Image (cartoon, rainbow, N blue to C red; front, top):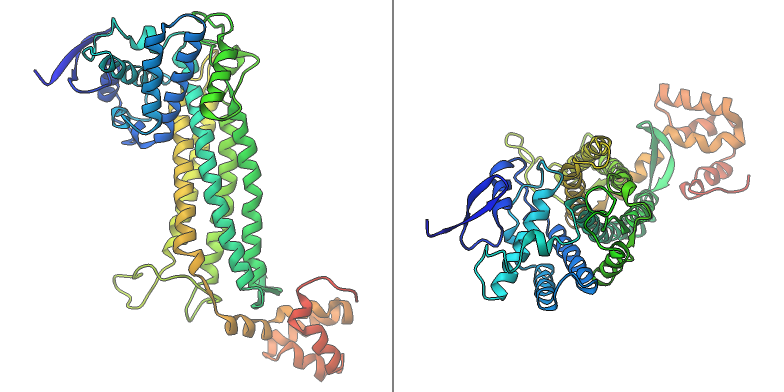
Length: 466
Protein backbone atom coordinates (compact mmCIF):
# COMPACT_ATOMS: atom_id res chain seq x y z
CA UNK A 1 0.00 0.00 0.00
CA UNK A 2 2.87 2.36 0.80
CA UNK A 3 4.21 1.97 -2.74
CA UNK A 4 1.09 3.54 -4.23
CA UNK A 5 -0.84 6.77 -4.02
CA UNK A 6 -4.55 7.22 -4.62
CA UNK A 7 -5.79 9.48 -7.41
CA UNK A 8 -9.37 10.13 -8.48
CA UNK A 9 -11.13 10.95 -11.73
CA UNK A 10 -14.62 10.76 -13.19
CA UNK A 11 -14.81 6.99 -12.68
CA UNK A 12 -13.52 6.91 -9.12
CA UNK A 13 -10.28 6.28 -7.23
CA UNK A 14 -7.35 4.29 -8.57
CA UNK A 15 -3.96 3.36 -7.18
CA UNK A 16 -0.95 4.82 -9.03
CA UNK A 17 2.68 3.87 -8.30
CA UNK A 18 3.87 6.33 -5.67
CA UNK A 19 6.98 7.43 -7.56
CA UNK A 20 5.31 7.66 -10.96
CA UNK A 21 5.05 11.08 -12.55
CA UNK A 22 1.99 9.98 -14.51
CA UNK A 23 -1.42 9.88 -12.84
CA UNK A 24 -4.82 8.23 -12.76
CA UNK A 25 -5.80 8.66 -16.42
CA UNK A 26 -2.49 7.25 -17.60
CA UNK A 27 -2.94 4.34 -15.21
CA UNK A 28 -6.36 3.60 -16.69
CA UNK A 29 -4.84 3.61 -20.18
CA UNK A 30 -2.13 1.17 -19.05
CA UNK A 31 -4.83 -1.20 -17.84
CA UNK A 32 -7.25 -0.69 -20.75
CA UNK A 33 -5.00 -0.79 -23.80
CA UNK A 34 -2.69 -3.79 -24.00
CA UNK A 35 -2.66 -3.87 -27.78
CA UNK A 36 0.50 -3.37 -29.83
CA UNK A 37 3.28 -3.60 -27.28
CA UNK A 38 4.68 -0.38 -28.74
CA UNK A 39 4.48 2.44 -26.24
CA UNK A 40 4.77 6.20 -26.33
CA UNK A 41 8.27 5.74 -24.94
CA UNK A 42 9.14 3.87 -28.17
CA UNK A 43 8.71 7.15 -30.07
CA UNK A 44 10.90 9.81 -28.42
CA UNK A 45 10.13 12.41 -31.11
CA UNK A 46 6.45 12.14 -30.23
CA UNK A 47 7.16 12.72 -26.53
CA UNK A 48 9.40 15.68 -27.34
CA UNK A 49 6.67 17.06 -29.60
CA UNK A 50 4.13 16.80 -26.79
CA UNK A 51 6.50 18.81 -24.60
CA UNK A 52 6.92 21.44 -27.32
CA UNK A 53 3.15 21.81 -27.63
CA UNK A 54 2.65 22.07 -23.86
CA UNK A 55 5.44 24.62 -23.55
CA UNK A 56 3.97 26.72 -26.37
CA UNK A 57 0.54 26.51 -24.74
CA UNK A 58 1.91 27.54 -21.34
CA UNK A 59 3.83 30.46 -22.87
CA UNK A 60 0.70 31.63 -24.69
CA UNK A 61 -1.43 31.36 -21.55
CA UNK A 62 1.19 33.30 -19.59
CA UNK A 63 1.40 36.05 -22.20
CA UNK A 64 -2.39 36.33 -22.25
CA UNK A 65 -2.51 36.64 -18.46
CA UNK A 66 -4.04 33.25 -17.70
CA UNK A 67 -1.03 31.64 -15.99
CA UNK A 68 1.02 33.18 -13.19
CA UNK A 69 4.72 33.56 -13.82
CA UNK A 70 6.21 31.07 -11.34
CA UNK A 71 3.96 28.29 -12.52
CA UNK A 72 4.69 29.09 -16.17
CA UNK A 73 8.46 29.07 -15.55
CA UNK A 74 8.28 25.65 -13.90
CA UNK A 75 6.08 24.24 -16.65
CA UNK A 76 8.42 25.56 -19.34
CA UNK A 77 11.46 24.20 -17.51
CA UNK A 78 9.83 20.78 -17.20
CA UNK A 79 8.94 20.76 -20.89
CA UNK A 80 12.58 21.56 -21.67
CA UNK A 81 13.66 18.57 -19.58
CA UNK A 82 11.34 16.29 -21.54
CA UNK A 83 12.53 17.76 -24.84
CA UNK A 84 16.08 16.92 -23.74
CA UNK A 85 15.11 13.28 -23.21
CA UNK A 86 14.24 13.15 -19.52
CA UNK A 87 11.17 11.40 -18.07
CA UNK A 88 10.48 9.45 -21.27
CA UNK A 89 10.01 6.29 -19.22
CA UNK A 90 6.94 7.97 -17.73
CA UNK A 91 5.03 7.53 -21.00
CA UNK A 92 4.12 3.82 -20.72
CA UNK A 93 0.82 3.70 -22.63
CA UNK A 94 0.18 1.79 -25.84
CA UNK A 95 0.30 3.73 -29.09
CA UNK A 96 -2.97 2.18 -30.23
CA UNK A 97 -5.88 3.13 -27.99
CA UNK A 98 -9.45 4.34 -27.92
CA UNK A 99 -10.40 7.85 -26.91
CA UNK A 100 -9.01 9.87 -29.84
CA UNK A 101 -5.70 10.45 -28.06
CA UNK A 102 -7.07 11.62 -24.71
CA UNK A 103 -4.83 9.18 -22.85
CA UNK A 104 -1.76 10.52 -24.64
CA UNK A 105 -2.66 14.12 -23.90
CA UNK A 106 -3.38 13.35 -20.26
CA UNK A 107 -0.20 11.33 -19.91
CA UNK A 108 1.75 14.45 -20.92
CA UNK A 109 -0.39 16.69 -18.71
CA UNK A 110 0.08 14.45 -15.66
CA UNK A 111 3.83 13.97 -16.08
CA UNK A 112 4.42 17.70 -16.47
CA UNK A 113 2.12 18.57 -13.56
CA UNK A 114 3.73 16.10 -11.15
CA UNK A 115 7.24 17.19 -12.12
CA UNK A 116 6.20 20.81 -11.49
CA UNK A 117 4.75 19.81 -8.12
CA UNK A 118 8.09 18.21 -7.27
CA UNK A 119 9.86 21.44 -8.18
CA UNK A 120 7.45 23.33 -5.94
CA UNK A 121 8.17 21.02 -3.03
CA UNK A 122 4.73 19.41 -3.14
CA UNK A 123 3.65 15.77 -3.22
CA UNK A 124 2.84 14.07 -6.51
CA UNK A 125 -0.90 14.11 -7.03
CA UNK A 126 -1.42 17.30 -5.00
CA UNK A 127 -3.08 18.91 -8.00
CA UNK A 128 -4.50 21.97 -6.24
CA UNK A 129 -1.08 23.60 -6.78
CA UNK A 130 -0.58 22.43 -10.36
CA UNK A 131 -3.38 20.60 -12.16
CA UNK A 132 -3.01 18.44 -15.31
CA UNK A 133 -6.33 19.80 -16.56
CA UNK A 134 -6.58 23.33 -15.16
CA UNK A 135 -2.97 24.40 -15.74
CA UNK A 136 -1.11 22.12 -18.17
CA UNK A 137 -4.16 21.66 -20.42
CA UNK A 138 -5.32 25.26 -20.05
CA UNK A 139 -6.96 26.69 -23.22
CA UNK A 140 -6.57 23.31 -24.93
CA UNK A 141 -8.36 20.10 -25.75
CA UNK A 142 -6.95 16.73 -26.73
CA UNK A 143 -8.50 17.51 -30.11
CA UNK A 144 -6.03 20.30 -30.82
CA UNK A 145 -3.02 19.45 -28.64
CA UNK A 146 -2.79 15.80 -29.70
CA UNK A 147 -2.85 16.23 -33.51
CA UNK A 148 -0.51 19.21 -33.21
CA UNK A 149 1.98 17.02 -31.34
CA UNK A 150 1.64 14.30 -33.97
CA UNK A 151 2.43 16.80 -36.69
CA UNK A 152 5.43 18.21 -34.81
CA UNK A 153 6.77 14.68 -34.33
CA UNK A 154 6.31 13.79 -38.00
CA UNK A 155 8.12 16.91 -39.20
CA UNK A 156 11.14 15.96 -37.10
CA UNK A 157 10.97 12.29 -38.05
CA UNK A 158 10.76 13.18 -41.74
CA UNK A 159 13.99 15.16 -41.44
CA UNK A 160 15.76 12.05 -40.15
CA UNK A 161 14.21 9.80 -42.80
CA UNK A 162 15.30 12.12 -45.60
CA UNK A 163 18.82 12.25 -44.17
CA UNK A 164 19.01 8.44 -44.22
CA UNK A 165 17.58 8.37 -47.75
CA UNK A 166 20.21 10.85 -48.94
CA UNK A 167 22.99 8.64 -47.56
CA UNK A 168 21.55 5.62 -49.34
CA UNK A 169 21.32 7.55 -52.60
CA UNK A 170 24.95 8.60 -52.22
CA UNK A 171 25.96 4.96 -51.68
CA UNK A 172 24.20 3.87 -54.89
CA UNK A 173 25.73 6.79 -56.77
CA UNK A 174 29.22 5.84 -55.58
CA UNK A 175 28.68 2.34 -56.91
CA UNK A 176 27.46 3.85 -60.17
CA UNK A 177 30.83 5.56 -60.52
CA UNK A 178 32.73 2.45 -59.49
CA UNK A 179 30.92 0.28 -62.06
CA UNK A 180 30.87 2.87 -64.87
CA UNK A 181 33.07 0.72 -67.15
CA UNK A 182 31.42 -2.64 -66.46
CA UNK A 183 29.55 -3.60 -69.66
CA UNK A 184 26.50 -5.85 -69.18
CA UNK A 185 23.20 -6.77 -70.77
CA UNK A 186 20.11 -4.80 -69.94
CA UNK A 187 16.91 -6.80 -69.64
CA UNK A 188 13.22 -6.19 -70.19
CA UNK A 189 10.63 -8.76 -69.07
CA UNK A 190 13.59 -10.82 -67.81
CA UNK A 191 14.74 -11.27 -71.42
CA UNK A 192 17.91 -9.94 -73.03
CA UNK A 193 17.44 -6.38 -74.27
CA UNK A 194 20.45 -4.21 -75.18
CA UNK A 195 23.83 -3.51 -73.53
CA UNK A 196 24.35 -0.99 -70.78
CA UNK A 197 26.81 -0.55 -67.94
CA UNK A 198 26.37 -1.78 -64.41
CA UNK A 199 27.16 1.81 -63.45
CA UNK A 200 24.13 3.06 -65.37
CA UNK A 201 21.99 0.52 -63.52
CA UNK A 202 23.19 1.68 -60.10
CA UNK A 203 22.97 5.35 -61.06
CA UNK A 204 19.34 4.69 -62.01
CA UNK A 205 18.75 3.28 -58.50
CA UNK A 206 20.11 6.53 -57.08
CA UNK A 207 18.06 8.70 -59.44
CA UNK A 208 14.74 7.00 -58.75
CA UNK A 209 15.20 7.31 -54.98
CA UNK A 210 16.34 10.92 -55.28
CA UNK A 211 12.96 11.88 -56.73
CA UNK A 212 11.33 10.94 -53.43
CA UNK A 213 13.22 13.49 -51.33
CA UNK A 214 11.19 16.38 -52.70
CA UNK A 215 7.96 14.37 -52.36
CA UNK A 216 8.60 13.56 -48.70
CA UNK A 217 9.64 17.12 -47.86
CA UNK A 218 6.78 18.84 -49.69
CA UNK A 219 4.22 16.51 -48.12
CA UNK A 220 5.75 16.87 -44.66
CA UNK A 221 5.49 20.63 -45.10
CA UNK A 222 1.71 20.26 -44.83
CA UNK A 223 2.19 19.39 -41.16
CA UNK A 224 3.18 22.97 -40.31
CA UNK A 225 -0.50 23.95 -40.33
CA UNK A 226 -1.92 23.26 -36.85
CA UNK A 227 -5.24 23.68 -35.05
CA UNK A 228 -4.11 24.84 -31.60
CA UNK A 229 -6.85 27.06 -30.22
CA UNK A 230 -9.55 24.96 -31.81
CA UNK A 231 -10.17 23.21 -28.48
CA UNK A 232 -13.01 20.66 -28.75
CA UNK A 233 -14.35 21.03 -32.29
CA UNK A 234 -12.77 24.14 -33.74
CA UNK A 235 -15.00 26.83 -32.26
CA UNK A 236 -12.32 27.79 -29.72
CA UNK A 237 -14.52 27.37 -26.67
CA UNK A 238 -12.55 27.97 -23.41
CA UNK A 239 -9.64 29.53 -25.31
CA UNK A 240 -9.04 33.30 -25.09
CA UNK A 241 -9.17 35.68 -28.04
CA UNK A 242 -5.88 35.64 -29.97
CA UNK A 243 -4.77 32.30 -28.53
CA UNK A 244 -4.58 30.36 -31.83
CA UNK A 245 -2.27 32.77 -33.68
CA UNK A 246 -0.07 33.45 -30.64
CA UNK A 247 0.29 29.76 -29.84
CA UNK A 248 1.36 29.00 -33.41
CA UNK A 249 3.92 31.79 -33.20
CA UNK A 250 5.28 30.46 -29.91
CA UNK A 251 5.44 26.91 -31.23
CA UNK A 252 7.43 28.20 -34.22
CA UNK A 253 9.98 29.77 -31.87
CA UNK A 254 10.24 26.65 -29.71
CA UNK A 255 10.46 24.13 -32.56
CA UNK A 256 12.40 26.08 -35.16
CA UNK A 257 9.78 25.27 -37.81
CA UNK A 258 7.50 27.77 -39.55
CA UNK A 259 4.29 26.73 -37.82
CA UNK A 260 1.05 28.44 -38.87
CA UNK A 261 -2.48 28.44 -37.53
CA UNK A 262 -5.07 26.80 -39.80
CA UNK A 263 -7.37 29.38 -41.42
CA UNK A 264 -10.47 27.35 -40.52
CA UNK A 265 -10.15 25.53 -37.20
CA UNK A 266 -13.48 23.71 -37.57
CA UNK A 267 -12.23 22.21 -40.84
CA UNK A 268 -8.73 21.54 -39.51
CA UNK A 269 -9.81 19.62 -36.40
CA UNK A 270 -11.21 16.50 -38.13
CA UNK A 271 -9.03 16.82 -41.25
CA UNK A 272 -6.39 14.11 -41.73
CA UNK A 273 -5.54 14.81 -45.37
CA UNK A 274 -1.93 15.69 -44.62
CA UNK A 275 -1.36 12.28 -43.05
CA UNK A 276 -2.84 10.53 -46.08
CA UNK A 277 -0.62 12.30 -48.59
CA UNK A 278 2.54 11.91 -46.50
CA UNK A 279 1.86 8.20 -46.03
CA UNK A 280 1.38 7.87 -49.77
CA UNK A 281 4.83 9.38 -50.33
CA UNK A 282 6.32 6.75 -48.03
CA UNK A 283 4.42 4.05 -49.90
CA UNK A 284 5.87 5.33 -53.16
CA UNK A 285 9.36 5.19 -51.66
CA UNK A 286 8.70 1.69 -50.33
CA UNK A 287 7.55 0.44 -53.73
CA UNK A 288 10.69 1.79 -55.39
CA UNK A 289 12.99 0.50 -52.68
CA UNK A 290 11.44 -2.96 -52.83
CA UNK A 291 11.86 -3.04 -56.62
CA UNK A 292 15.54 -2.18 -56.22
CA UNK A 293 15.95 -4.98 -53.69
CA UNK A 294 14.28 -7.38 -56.11
CA UNK A 295 16.86 -6.32 -58.71
CA UNK A 296 19.77 -6.80 -56.32
CA UNK A 297 18.56 -10.31 -55.52
CA UNK A 298 18.20 -11.16 -59.22
CA UNK A 299 21.56 -9.65 -60.22
CA UNK A 300 23.33 -11.60 -57.47
CA UNK A 301 21.48 -14.88 -58.09
CA UNK A 302 23.64 -17.94 -58.51
CA UNK A 303 26.53 -18.38 -58.07
CA UNK A 304 26.41 -21.03 -60.83
CA UNK A 305 22.83 -21.15 -62.05
CA UNK A 306 21.80 -17.49 -61.88
CA UNK A 307 22.78 -14.07 -63.26
CA UNK A 308 25.73 -13.70 -60.88
CA UNK A 309 26.59 -10.25 -62.26
CA UNK A 310 27.20 -8.83 -58.78
CA UNK A 311 28.22 -10.16 -55.39
CA UNK A 312 26.40 -9.06 -52.27
CA UNK A 313 28.35 -9.06 -49.00
CA UNK A 314 27.83 -12.45 -47.29
CA UNK A 315 26.09 -11.77 -43.98
CA UNK A 316 25.21 -15.21 -42.59
CA UNK A 317 24.99 -18.91 -43.58
CA UNK A 318 21.99 -19.43 -45.81
CA UNK A 319 20.78 -22.90 -45.00
CA UNK A 320 20.55 -25.44 -42.22
CA UNK A 321 20.79 -28.27 -44.78
CA UNK A 322 22.65 -26.95 -47.85
CA UNK A 323 26.37 -26.35 -47.08
CA UNK A 324 27.95 -23.29 -48.64
CA UNK A 325 24.67 -21.54 -49.41
CA UNK A 326 24.56 -17.78 -48.72
CA UNK A 327 21.30 -15.87 -49.14
CA UNK A 328 20.63 -12.19 -49.92
CA UNK A 329 19.24 -11.60 -46.43
CA UNK A 330 19.64 -7.82 -46.40
CA UNK A 331 17.57 -7.09 -49.53
CA UNK A 332 15.08 -9.68 -48.25
CA UNK A 333 14.56 -7.90 -44.96
CA UNK A 334 14.22 -4.55 -46.74
CA UNK A 335 11.59 -6.08 -49.04
CA UNK A 336 9.62 -7.12 -45.97
CA UNK A 337 9.88 -3.66 -44.43
CA UNK A 338 8.50 -2.22 -47.66
CA UNK A 339 5.52 -4.58 -47.53
CA UNK A 340 4.84 -3.40 -43.99
CA UNK A 341 4.98 0.26 -45.06
CA UNK A 342 2.61 -0.41 -47.96
CA UNK A 343 0.22 -2.11 -45.55
CA UNK A 344 0.48 0.75 -43.08
CA UNK A 345 -0.53 3.14 -45.84
CA UNK A 346 -3.80 1.25 -46.22
CA UNK A 347 -4.30 1.52 -42.45
CA UNK A 348 -3.81 5.28 -42.70
CA UNK A 349 -6.31 5.44 -45.55
CA UNK A 350 -9.00 3.58 -43.61
CA UNK A 351 -8.32 5.55 -40.42
CA UNK A 352 -8.54 8.87 -42.26
CA UNK A 353 -11.76 7.85 -43.99
CA UNK A 354 -13.29 6.90 -40.63
CA UNK A 355 -13.50 10.50 -39.45
CA UNK A 356 -17.01 11.50 -38.50
CA UNK A 357 -18.46 14.98 -38.18
CA UNK A 358 -16.19 17.27 -36.12
CA UNK A 359 -13.45 14.78 -35.13
CA UNK A 360 -11.47 11.81 -36.38
CA UNK A 361 -11.16 9.46 -33.40
CA UNK A 362 -8.86 7.06 -35.28
CA UNK A 363 -5.78 9.26 -35.06
CA UNK A 364 -3.99 6.90 -32.62
CA UNK A 365 -3.72 4.06 -35.15
CA UNK A 366 -3.15 6.56 -37.95
CA UNK A 367 -0.22 8.23 -36.18
CA UNK A 368 1.20 4.90 -35.04
CA UNK A 369 1.12 3.53 -38.60
CA UNK A 370 2.96 6.55 -40.01
CA UNK A 371 5.54 6.72 -37.21
CA UNK A 372 6.16 2.99 -37.45
CA UNK A 373 6.65 3.30 -41.21
CA UNK A 374 9.14 6.14 -40.80
CA UNK A 375 11.13 4.17 -38.22
CA UNK A 376 11.04 0.96 -40.25
CA UNK A 377 12.05 2.71 -43.47
CA UNK A 378 14.86 4.62 -41.79
CA UNK A 379 16.25 1.47 -40.20
CA UNK A 380 15.92 -0.44 -43.48
CA UNK A 381 17.75 2.27 -45.42
CA UNK A 382 20.61 2.24 -42.91
CA UNK A 383 20.78 -1.55 -42.98
CA UNK A 384 20.74 -1.71 -46.79
CA UNK A 385 23.46 0.91 -47.09
CA UNK A 386 25.77 -0.36 -44.35
CA UNK A 387 25.40 -4.11 -44.82
CA UNK A 388 24.79 -4.41 -48.54
CA UNK A 389 25.31 -1.52 -50.96
CA UNK A 390 28.76 -0.42 -49.83
CA UNK A 391 30.12 -3.98 -50.09
CA UNK A 392 28.72 -4.91 -53.51
CA UNK A 393 31.30 -6.02 -56.09
CA UNK A 394 30.94 -6.69 -59.82
CA UNK A 395 31.70 -9.86 -61.77
CA UNK A 396 33.05 -8.02 -64.81
CA UNK A 397 33.91 -11.03 -66.99
CA UNK A 398 30.54 -12.66 -66.50
CA UNK A 399 28.81 -9.40 -67.42
CA UNK A 400 30.93 -8.99 -70.57
CA UNK A 401 30.52 -12.60 -71.73
CA UNK A 402 26.74 -12.27 -71.45
CA UNK A 403 26.92 -9.28 -73.78
CA UNK A 404 29.11 -11.07 -76.31
CA UNK A 405 26.84 -14.11 -76.48
CA UNK A 406 23.53 -12.29 -76.31
CA UNK A 407 20.99 -12.29 -79.11
CA UNK A 408 19.96 -8.86 -77.83
CA UNK A 409 22.82 -7.08 -79.57
CA UNK A 410 21.06 -7.66 -82.88
CA UNK A 411 18.92 -4.64 -81.95
CA UNK A 412 21.90 -2.45 -82.77
CA UNK A 413 21.75 -3.72 -86.39
CA UNK A 414 18.18 -2.49 -86.99
CA UNK A 415 19.14 0.94 -88.38
CA UNK A 416 21.66 -0.70 -90.77
CA UNK A 417 20.04 -3.91 -92.05
CA UNK A 418 16.36 -3.40 -91.20
CA UNK A 419 14.01 -5.07 -88.73
CA UNK A 420 13.22 -8.05 -91.01
CA UNK A 421 16.85 -9.01 -91.59
CA UNK A 422 17.61 -8.48 -87.90
CA UNK A 423 14.71 -10.75 -86.94
CA UNK A 424 15.92 -13.52 -89.27
CA UNK A 425 19.44 -13.27 -87.87
CA UNK A 426 18.12 -13.43 -84.30
CA UNK A 427 15.91 -16.42 -85.09
CA UNK A 428 18.71 -18.37 -86.74
CA UNK A 429 21.09 -17.57 -83.90
CA UNK A 430 18.58 -18.97 -81.43
CA UNK A 431 17.95 -22.11 -83.47
CA UNK A 432 21.56 -22.90 -84.33
CA UNK A 433 23.46 -21.55 -81.35
CA UNK A 434 25.61 -19.55 -83.74
CA UNK A 435 26.46 -15.96 -82.78
CA UNK A 436 24.85 -12.90 -84.30
CA UNK A 437 28.30 -11.69 -85.23
CA UNK A 438 29.21 -14.81 -87.24
CA UNK A 439 25.86 -15.01 -89.03
CA UNK A 440 26.07 -11.42 -90.28
CA UNK A 441 29.54 -12.07 -91.71
CA UNK A 442 28.59 -15.45 -93.22
CA UNK A 443 25.66 -13.87 -95.04
CA UNK A 444 27.81 -10.98 -96.25
CA UNK A 445 25.35 -8.43 -94.94
CA UNK A 446 28.02 -6.14 -93.48
CA UNK A 447 31.80 -5.92 -93.60
CA UNK A 448 33.69 -7.04 -90.53
CA UNK A 449 35.00 -3.51 -90.00
CA UNK A 450 31.51 -2.02 -90.06
CA UNK A 451 30.09 -4.81 -87.91
CA UNK A 452 32.81 -4.35 -85.30
CA UNK A 453 32.04 -0.67 -85.17
CA UNK A 454 28.29 -1.20 -84.79
CA UNK A 455 28.53 -3.98 -82.21
CA UNK A 456 31.18 -2.36 -80.07
CA UNK A 457 29.37 -2.34 -76.69
CA UNK A 458 30.67 1.13 -75.97
CA UNK A 459 28.84 2.42 -79.07
CA UNK A 460 25.56 0.95 -77.87
CA UNK A 461 25.42 2.79 -74.57
CA UNK A 462 24.21 6.14 -75.82
CA UNK A 463 22.38 7.80 -78.71
CA UNK A 464 24.39 8.62 -81.85
CA UNK A 465 23.91 9.69 -85.49
CA UNK A 466 23.45 6.97 -88.11
